[in-house]
Image (cartoon, rainbow, N blue to C red; front, side, top):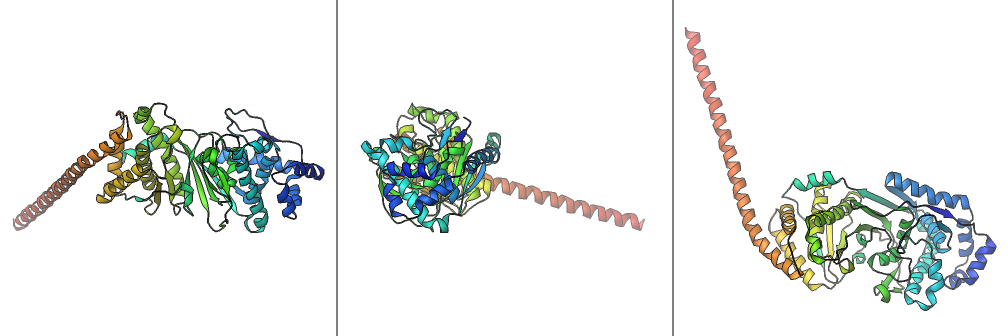
Length: 451
């Protein structure tokens, strides 16, 4: 899908006043904040500048996979979305890439979810305006990563045993609860998901509302391919919330402008049949996708721990244990690719006690021996094309694989020692032969000299 937008007619002071008189969401905010109306008019008055801001950045991102916007530019784009100033010339189905908020504003009275979404937008507007002189010039980066699949296969084949994984497990925290972290967005391939529709508010939609500046990604980032991931860097957490989907509610809390977050968008595959996710091509697909994300995050923000969890589970029907294994292997491969050792991955199990215990089992296995990457690789590949009817079967299999792996590792160590000893023995023989040849040559030389 090609993103193609135009700008509707520019806003005049009279039009803005009329709009605000009818806007029950922002009316009290404009009465409360002196100068807000004039400020918004000033940033929205120049139609040519707005068109350039929108279309130039679409073109730039498509060419370079990289875009930097100031917070003030992002605020301008969100105000254009709020006031229905963006005309979409491209078709998108199922309410993806909704970029105007007019529908929400017309329907919020009888819909508590819509009202909560608009409260998040309102809180963002208030905070940005009050702090624009401090944060307005700060930059937010949007980066897309596209992985060469052949190079990825080569990387997988180069097993390196000494990589150690820094894994943190949490029982009740969510991805976005960790300050100064890279928050994994369990994304739809259509980035931004259904944030601006009237029905949906799952994990991705919540992140777009909490880190409100991320909303503008829908303006210039097209659907992701299976080898692509997107990183949005240096976001502020403007909103807090409680609930999920229909129960989602905005919760007023103090905003910390000294903490920054990244959002890492990786879209999992939907499995209508549970067992299909264990097919080789599907494991490879999920491994490639998560690697595309983790490699991007580690390369651009190595000091930010990657905060993830039940990626691709829920309505996508992914098995959380398989997904955890895939993410850990992708993380290990990304560390190897970037030659990083200090980056951490946080696994948030969010009340899933069985997954938490499974995570503890994996951590204990990986700490016990130094062959982390080899163990994960062998375990993942051993799962391919097997048939599991439940998560319990996977846990049982991993436990049995651990004991087999221990004996395999011991055998591997023994083989490595034998290979090393044989090489030393061969080298010693070669050295002795060289010394013997030198001595024979010296004796022959002495005899020839006497004669």
